[in-house]
Length: 252
Image (cartoon, rainbow, N blue to C red; front, side, top):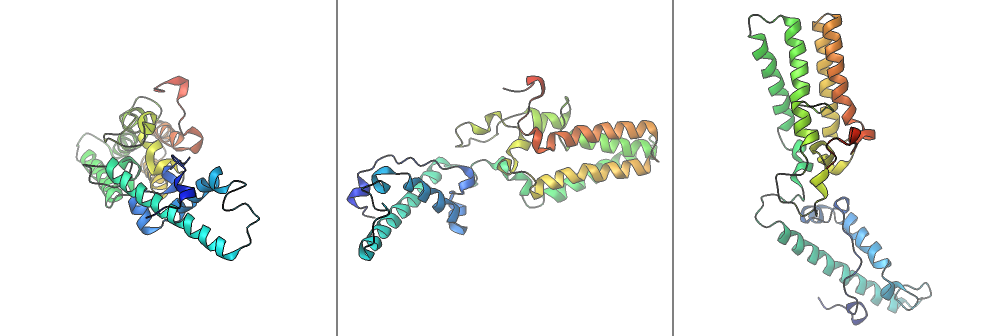
C-alpha cells in the first residue's frame, strides 16, 4: 500500500495498543471497531496530520480534498492493521493460542465449569464413603476443602497459593511483564469485574455454604467454621480488593 507523502514523513506514531482495544488477530476478524477507534484517536493526536496545516483543520470545505484526505487516512489505518496482525503473530510464535495471556480466558473454556462442579461432587462422595465421618462433618469438610482448593482467600491456604499467592503466568506472554505482579484471579477476564466466570466462582461457595448450613442443622460450631470459610472466600473477590495486598504481604 502506498502511503501519501505527508503521512509517510511521520515515523513512530504515538500509538499505544491496550488489551481492551481488542487489536489481536481474532478480534480483528470478528469486530475491528474498537481497534479502529483506538487507531483513529491516535491519528487525531498526530500534529503533522491533524495540526493547523494538516488534513482536518476545521476549515476544509472542498469535497474533493475531503475525499482524498479521508482515503489517505483509511489507507494508513489499513496499513497499521496489517502491521499489527503481523507483529502479533510474530510475538506469539510457537504457541497454540491467540491470547496475549491465556490465564485471562481459562475459566471461560469449554467444560471448565462442569469439571469444577463434578470435582466438588466427587469430593463430597469420597468424604461420604469414609465410615467414621458423620453427614454434618462431611458437609463442613466439603465446604472448607472446596474453599481451600477451589476458591481464593487471604490467609495461607491451598487456593490462596493458586489464585492469590502465585503471580505471573506459566506462559511466555508479550505483555511486557504486566501480569508478573498479578494473581490468577486478578488476571481473569483482563481484570473486568462481574463477568460470567467471576459470578460463577462467587455464587458456587455461597450455594455450598447454604447446603452445608442446612445439612449441619445450623449447629453453632459448624456454622462458625463454614461462615469464616465463606468470608475468607468472598472478600478477595470483591472489586474493592482487586490488587490489594494486606500488610504488604505478597506485594512483589
